[in-house]
Length: 500
Ligand SMILES: *Cc1c(COP(=O)(O)O)cnc(C)c1O
Image (cartoon, rainbow, N blue to C red; front, side, top):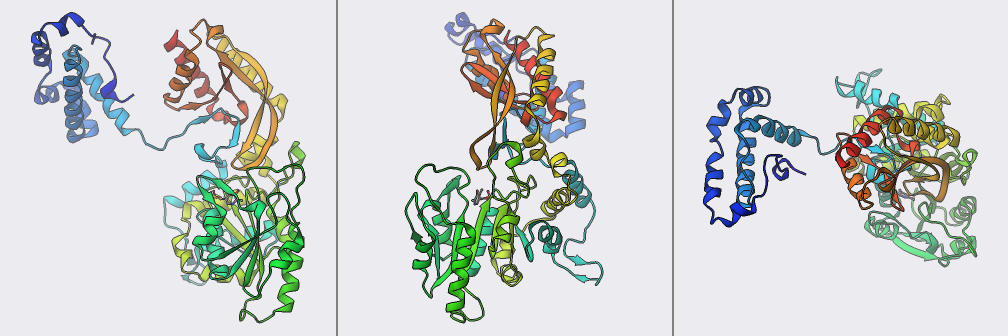
């Protein structure tokens, strides 16, 4: 609700007044003070000293307009001494940033709508350390000459994935687009029909292929594609065999896709047969678009094994692309790793400049990767802490919330439930958890109020996003950062006090 829409407690709709031909309304309009008179009020003068005269004058004008409409609608004018609070509330609301922290109580760990991966402490500190002063972003300190921004995360990425070289762009979509533009423009890319997928937000693999200038060659069928389908489709025009990880959906039943290693074997045989067909470049290459791009295995946590970047490199993929803010748990970025001579060509492409990342991304990415290098990612990278947290830990946290709320007379339940990975990773795979459940009835409120309760939670100073299921609000501790627990409890209490 914007300040203009907020009815004042002393403004009541008076039907009798409305009926009286507008006369009392004229009296109400006259109660609205002049801008100058308001600016002379000491409390408002203080606001002007703090926020600037222009901001306060603008606020007064906007509020006066709103009050005139309110009076036209039958409300009464606010008392003169209510104005400082009105102006203050208006300015506070207007100064709220549009992009704000929220509490994710949904239990979806990589929530694309909620900013995907929360950054580690080390990543946040690295961003802060690099943004205040100047930095060696593109400066080679040893040589005292121009350097490359892409050197910063390079060695860590190579070490962690086993690749010869690495480069970082804006996100995985741009990574894939760039790689296809570099190697496949006006040439053919072979892909299984089962992998012509839409990732989300309208991002469709066939569209990206066409935009890059590549010619799409579909092989196999929706459910079954064999290695020989790829082998049979190769022509002298084939630039790449593309595997796209079907990250956000799963096919079950009569399903086959070739292993990455089989595609590598087919590509190598073909290169051997037409060496020299494309000048220096030995085509076709194998491109593996992983999307989620884990560096740790998800298998120890009772989940299906999500393919890791190092497995793809070990299987012989020439180029592997993955996101920085999915299972890597870092900033938004698109990571391209692979063979040195290929990455060198990617780095030289003119589009590289258009898709480049800034120093904050590189600082956060380097710090995140360092946690993997130190073997401390499970403890330090928030999404891995969430993935590896036990059901018992979730039960204890939800129980503590419950105690804190019941102390204020709020009735709660603990329920067994499932957390999801999200971010287009591991569809249908869940982690057992305990959630705090709140219902309107148990709190002696009308049952329809759960929707209002959820809406008011989203309007709190730190908005709370939760799940609604069979008339209950569900709060999953797995995705609530420990530092946000107090704000969560306080918000639930505030809204309860408001509604009851
Ligand atoms: C998520 C995903 C992408 C896009 O990654 P962004 O970082 O969101 O651009 C591309 N390919 C696959 C397979 C994905 O899962």
